Image 1 (cartoon, rainbow, N blue to C red):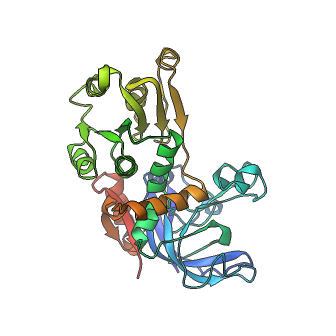
Image 2: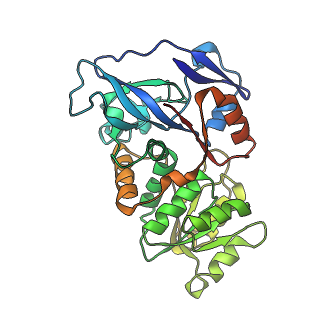
Image 3: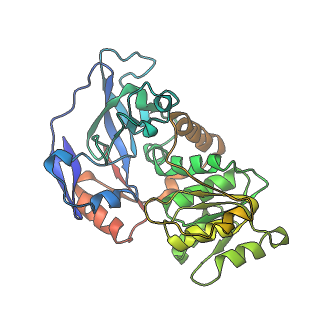
Length: 342
């Protein structure tokens, strides 16, 4: 089979691998859609990797079960099932693994498609059967791929700050994850203020349901948000998706007393005065992807509310176009891309 690997220092290759065979508790999935994630670029530009560190990339998997291991029950998976993958494995016995938050396993954590497990940028992918989440019949493979990481992460962030329908939320950064936050927050009934320095992305945010858009390169975002809220008190909640150090500070400062901010953008520093939190009794939390149950809940939410997650994708690619796809993605010439398979 063909598969995409990152070599580090911005280099990637398409390699031939033997078709995987499932172990007793494993399944093999024939990929139908494998999303490109912003965090892929961090892996792409890491220092040069040794051969023992190279894995198949892609951690937004969605496809059809091709083969099952001897110990996999039909209730877990059977050939022909349409599935997403919760792209982690662990020791399976610690409190995190048992609760479905496998990514926090401290002893045997595996991250498929980017860290230490082979991922979804391939024709076939082998994973433990317990990682599978059934895909709704009416949900496209592309939507399933989005929920398998970026959009699922957005959904979990809003659950993390307990967003309510009568609240105002400010969403900093309108890349694929930020747009998903905007879309889901609006579907939850909230008033959404979307922020980005790109007018094109602000236009997309408006189409995805944002009530108000702000360009921080033109206006003071904290003042603008307070001016838009009752009594000038600020937003009830905020979500920061840009990894920008200034946006992170502003996301905290724009919230009202007792407000909450969720930091989603990975890597980089965060700088703010302690009084920004203490004097307003604000909360600042992080959120790393989602549990298996939350991934399933997100898919249910998308279907129940008729949310057009497919609209997040601006470009489709074949696997053999991987070099071109990541060059365009790295240069910010495309939005969210996805590899599609026959």
